[in-house]
Amino acid sequence: MHTQVVVLNDSLKRESGQKVHHANIQASKAVADIIRTTLGPRSMLKMLLDASGGIVVTNDGNAILRELDIAHPAAKSMIELSRTQDEEVGDGTTSVIVLAGEMLHVAEAFIDKKYHPTVICRAYNKALEDAVAVLDKIAMTIDVNDRGIMLSLVKSCIGTKFTSQFGDLIADLAIDATTTVGVDLGQGLREVDIKKYIKVEKVPGSQLEESRVLKGVMFNKDVVAPGKMRRKIVNPRIILLDCPLEYKKGENQTNAELVKEEDWELLLKMEEEYIENICSRILKFKPDLVITEKGISDLATHYLSKAGVSAIRRLRKTDNNRIAKACGAVIVNRPDELQESDVGTAAGLFEVKKIGDEFFSFIVDCQDPKACTVLLRGASKDLLNEVERNLQDAMAVARNILKNPKLVPGGGATELTVSATLKQKSSSVEGIEKWPYEAAAIAFEAIPRTLAQNCGVNVIRKMTELQGLHANGENAWTGIDGNTGEISDMKERKIWDAYNVKAQTFKTAIEAACMLLRIDDIVSGIKKKQAPGAGPSKPQVETEADADGEQILPD
Image (cartoon, rainbow, N blue to C red; front, side, top):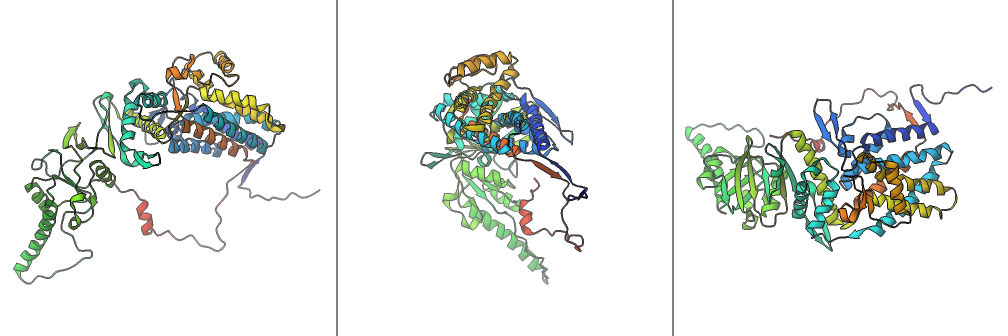
C-alpha cells in the first residue's frame, strides 16, 4: 500500500475533468440567460443598481455585463466577449453572448458522451469557416451614398434598442455625424474616428426631438469677460492657442532685491509690456475669437476686449482638437509663430447660448467640418445616458457600413440560412466530427429562437415553419419580424444587419466557446511567491511615465 503524497498545498483548490467542463458551461449559460431577454425589438430593459446607489437602465448587452460583478472565471471571459464585440464593431453585443452560450450548451451532450474537447473544437472551427462562406454568399453590396438604405440599415440595428420608439431620430443623428467626420484615405478606404471627432453633449431639459448634429462644435464654456466681449460673431476668424496669455513665472524660485523704488515700477512695466507684446502679435492677424487651453490674465483680457476680440480660456485639449478640425485652424504653441494659415476661417457663426442654467459656446455652420458635436436633449439623466449608448451603437453601425458596405438579412434569417447550409454539409463531414458539426449548425438557431421567444409567439411552431422554409438553403431572406413575431421577407421589411457585425459575432462566439471547452483544470488560491529571506517589498516610487496615465481633474 503506497502512502499518500500531498503535492498541492492545502490552501489550493483544484477541480479537473468533466466537473470543470460542466461548471464552465453552466456559468456561461447563466450569463447568456441574464441578457437573453434583451435581444430583439421587443426586448426588456434591465435596471442595475451600483454600489454608490446610482442606477443604470439599459438593454445594451455590453452595458449590462459591464456593471455586473461576477465571481466565476468562465463567466468573466464571457463578459470580455461582449466588450470585444463592442469595441470592434459596436453592435451585436447581446447576440454574441447568446450564441456562445448556445454553442457551449450543445457541446455539453458530447462531453457527457466522453468526446474529447479538441474534437468538438475542430468541428466548431470547421463550422465557423463554412458559416462565414455562407455569409459571403448571401451578402449584398449597397451604395453608401443612398441615404434611404443607410437609414433603414441603422434603424434596424438600433430597432432593438430603447430609443427605437423615437423613430428615425437617432438613426438620422448617427448617419449625419459619421458622414461628417469620415475621411477618405484613398483606394476606396474610409476612416471614421468616432471617439476623437464626435463629441456627444448631453444637456438635460426640453424633449428628445430637439437633439441634433451641429455642423461644427459646442463646448461648455463662456467668454472670459461677458459684457465686454461679443457673444455672437458671424464668420469669425478663430485663433487656437496652446499657451497661456499671462506673464511667465520663473521656473525656479527667484529672489530679486530691489534697492530703488523705480526698479519696482520697471519690473511691473516689463510684465505689462510682455503681455502687451504677445497680444499685439495675436491682434496683428485681426482675429475675432481667441481660444486657449491655458489661462488668460486680466491684462490680456483687457487688451483683447479693447480690440473687440472674444476670448475663451482653459479649454480641454480634445475640444480644442475638434474645433481645429471643424473650422480649419491650426493649434499654435507660441504666439510668435502665428501665421495667416493658422487662422480658422471656415466657421460660419460663433455664439454663446444659455441652455438650462449653463452657458455653451457654439462654433457652427462650418464649411466641410471634419469634427462635430451631437447635442442630445432629454427629460432625465438616465434617459440621456441610454440614448447616448444607443447613439454610440448606431454610429458604430454607420461607420461599419462606410468601411465595408455589405449587408446580410436581419431577423434571424442569416442564422437560419447558415444553420440550414451547415446541416446539409454535415452529411459530407467524415468521422466523429460529424455530430458536433451538426450540433453547431443547430446552435445557430438560438438567435431566431430567442427573437421569437421575446415576441411571445408560439416558438416551436414558428421555428419549425422557418426551418421548413430554409430547409434547402433557399429563401435566405425569410426571417422573423421582431415586432410582431410574423414570418416575413426581410428585404420588404427593411431589416438588415451589417456584414462585418455578423461575421465578428460568429467568430467571437465560436472561438470563445472553443476556448472555454478546452479548459480542463481550474486551480484556485495560488499565492504570489516571495523569494526566501526577502523582506517586505519596497514601496513603489511613481515615475514620470506613470503620471501620464493619471486622469486630470476637470476644472
